[in-house]
Amino acid sequence: MDIATDADTRSQTLPASPSEDSSAGIGHAQHRPLVFVAALSTIFMAAMEGTIVATAMPTIVGSLGGIDLFSWIFGAYLLTQAILIPIYGRLSDLYGRKPVLLFGIGVFLVGSVLCGLAWNMMSLIVFRIVQGIGSGALIPVSQTVVADIYSGEARARMQGYISSTFGSAAVIGPMIGGLIATHVSWKAIFWINIPFGIIAASLLSLALKEEVKKRRHYIDYIGAVLMASATALMMIALTAADTLSAATLAAAFGVSAMLIAALIFYESRVSEPMIPIRLYRNRLVAGGNWVGAANGAISMAIVGFLPVYMHSLMGSSTLISGVALGTLSVFWPFGGFVGSRMVLRMPYRLSSTIGAIILATGSTLLILLHPNASPLHPIIAVGIMGLGMGISNISFVVAIQDNVDWSQRGAAMSSVFFSRIIGQSFGSAVFGGIFNAGLASRGSFNGNEVVQLLQEGHKQIAKIPGIAGILDTLAHTLHSIYLVSGLIAVLVAAAVPCFPSALRLREQR
Image (cartoon, rainbow, N blue to C red; front, side, top):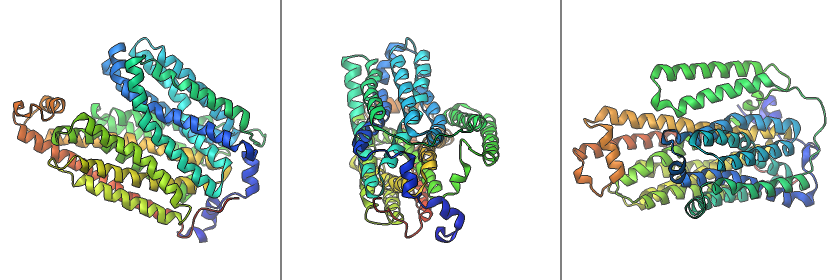
């Protein structure tokens, strides 16, 4: 379908008039730098949360105990965040970005304070849920604020700075987390959020001037409940997929699918839906969601299984494995920065195509990885993949910001972040299933021998009985994971036709 000739799609993808955008809340031009600093502070705080906590996990578990529950420190946070991201996005379209973002910052800071006061693992998980309730608003609504106050080429340049902020958080977070946990207290890794949050909230309160039209809104509570229930059930099932029976997993997905069907049916019939279903008819939004989900899934193949490959099959140290993962954290935001400059000079379709080709190239290198390869091989492959992910993702982000009306921009941006989290959960479950099935189907050994290999690496490899069979099975299984990941990377290119061939960034208004 050609967007240029389809009246319904054209009305959704063509931009609002300048007057519409301005009346929605751009505010005074002189306040833009302060609002932008506030948005960057909020994004940095939220982006650093994941890496800084991960670094301190051994210290936290050592202090609080409950090792059997520690995975839920991440799971509870991500689950709550995922449920609320699309809801916050829609609320920001109805009531403005400022109140929603200030609420999110406030709840996030309360949760951060409480996390530092946790007395056992269960209390920490509960307080991480509080953090997640606030976190769902932070990144998507902050990026939407930036899209509101800038337009045209300036908007694309600002997205480059935001990508750099993600990269800085990925590099700085682990270092700060390690230093604080070692020399201060693990509690302080949560409390470090407080100054960033206070700065951001103060600047937003003073500088962001919105002019949202005051009118009575219909609050779609039923849609919110259906959305939250479907997302929660699906993510819990994906997170616990390796411990659930096939029948239980199928039942969970079946119920989740029915809830989604009910959501679509209901939301298409209310005047102000919490999840504007019509928005997904917009090819840019649909393509951006697919790219976000695909990138999320691919990242889990790297984060979850590349250290296993490098440590157990290649004999690389933990430090070298960490460098490979760090390469993804740095080059994905760097790709976003590069992509934000590319869309200034070429149509979105071309920049997205370049990103997809780069991603497929890196994925091919990862498929070709073998146990005798140099440690530079996976590091280079992951770096190329991160670059491709960043370029392909930012092309859709900027296009959506530039071509979706203010009244739906918050929901559109939130949907992209939501799809990435769902992709991460799906990828974790699928690749984990491939890993477990591969080991179970090919070996005459048990899981304890694999655990021993993961613990000792190549240092005392000769002591492990049947080591040749273990290495062969592990290599074959991980290769299968990267084949599937590579297929997903190739399918990222399927989103390219979502861009009209001539669509490109509009000039500054």
